[in-house]
Image (cartoon, rainbow over all chains, first blue to last red; front, side, top):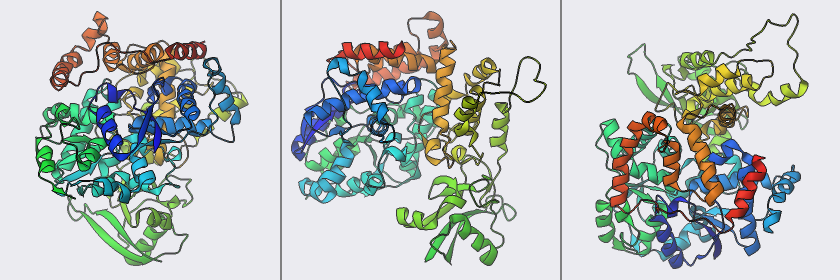
Length: 298
Length: 322
């Protein structure tokens, strides 16, 4: 399988462990990556606050680049995925073809035109839908049976549902749980899995943002989870990076390692915790590392 | 079809901590809504089951509650759809509000916040002798916001209210936008000043929960974002929220992708002594975060690279800004 790879800003910025972990697992899974070098930020919902058209033009530019390569886009961030999916719905709305024309008028100078054919998929969905859980499982060399893992989706990969094609792809709403089970771990289900991590509030109302971190991490800790896994690096930044503050603010002794989805897959594929960059997390993953290294081979 | 309804109940008359769950098994028709099933339970099995309802047609907004963890109107949620999606039906009272009994919540905090935003037209001069005249199109633009039936589903699912009950919440803020956008109302500046404060528009976390659960297509979060934009256009930019939005745009314009370090500097106004001083606590709070990130080699690169074709990105920005 070949994809136009859209790594997003954070996998090369605040979560630098995510980008190399993704490259490694894709090589092992046989996903050929053609990185979209000239693609811009999706706008992350922030640009869209001010000017939705601007956000849609920037995303149409990225979609046009993938369309020229005749490849689907693969994302590794719930926020990128959701923002792009929303933009693509507007751009391909058959009731308003004039909108795509308007957007394309801004791309003309660069020699780009978006025809509306690009498919955008998070690696989470690619694994569940294009590979299928059964096929992915055949590639795993470790069974992480000793681990109890809570899913944490990130807002934009679950809302708004009008943009995410859940009716045609019902597995998307259980995809993280399916992959946690596929690696042999036990799912720790909790209501907070589709709530907000608080990242967008971090510089505006840090107290509320950190309260969200404390709420989710302490809940899954009480439920007996050894770790959380997320397909969103922004959630990772907050849930991992601000956990020390959450501990202090809430007065609860929280210790909850947070894994990026590609890291969890990588550990089951046989990569070491160090190869997956777990040593770069703020919350120590020592117990996870031990469980992984002592896990049963498939 | 036989279904089981798992109902979250509360009976403070027995004991103020008397929260319990009760399962009811009943025969339902395909067209049954969750409200139909609850009424059947109340009418034939347990008359003590408390709930609010009236119109049964998504008009009155009385029956907002949680079905399998998501808020909505019980009267427009079909049992068969819930079973098809989740396999079971769990009903709970609306969230973020105190429970009075079973599925009835105290809506007072919701109404208090609605009143706080002054949900009525205010003029500065004398009131017109007859009716207020407004252009037809301006009223058509308000249709979406006016559609709010104040059921509180958005309030119930708001992720900010889960951690901070001072937040005005999506319904009140969407209502505020309805008056800001109404050409007859003349209090935009006063409304902006109120909504620019803590508890106002900048405290929304943009999680889209309100957009997802609103049964009337009000899109509260979109309206909150539109107020943010109007506040900035009115020149009120001395907030971290406004600096964050403008800083974000300027970084994408000049580099194509986001530089997190620059964004923090711009948001906290590091190079503006007055702004930096107002953010001094946050800035000091960042030091241990930055230190931990540095120790784990997680700090973003010092020099952020521009993407290929950034000149075109800049041109797109300029054209749209014009």
